[in-house]
Length: 308
Image (cartoon, rainbow, N blue to C red):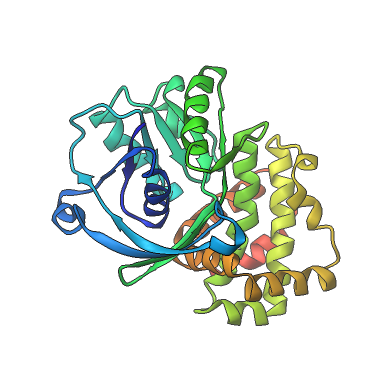
């Protein structure tokens, strides 16, 4: 496949690297970044979950190939953007490549109306990354999962989904296909956004984890968010993370804290979360507004919103 990735951020670079062994990867950048990024080689330190446990820690280099205009056809254009950046990205790329196929690689809360303004239904599928991390100077410090989440909203999107699944499988990444990609994205959004608001109170994860009262409020806000998802049409029984929230807090809290303190993969996910706090706060505001419109009891979300 010839794949164009929007930008040179963490997710775009991780998947550019992961897919480049079997596909032709190009990054679309603004003109003011072209001279800086085109041909640039960066080092990486990646936990690569596609490998066996003895070879999971990998280091190496990745070289960017960049363009500022779309002058050729691509089999897929990947948009790994924050949700609040999606409309501007679609407006730009749909104008420059009106007939291209797109992977909308971001969270969602409001459905597809924003996407459908710019793309025909057969032009896109939706998904979410199975990796994360951050840049430490030029060093990409992250992890690539051996899975990602992909899905369709409309039946007409199935051929594009099949082709994209094949592309990822060829590189050792096994896509998970939920029964309803929008519901999956809403649930995943609820599982991260309240914590993002909580993270904004501190400058380090260790400080957040020590604030047991704040963590408890974030968990309760998630439970309220799941109820909002249910009112929006999601079947909560399909999502194990919802069931997990029924575990008593005195059991759940040490499990949660230990996972973030001891799990090196989770530490890289969290490093990415600190860079995405603005996105999580913005998504939380949308959830809060929906909860108010549904007249649902969202006491903890309201308390948490004081940190916005």
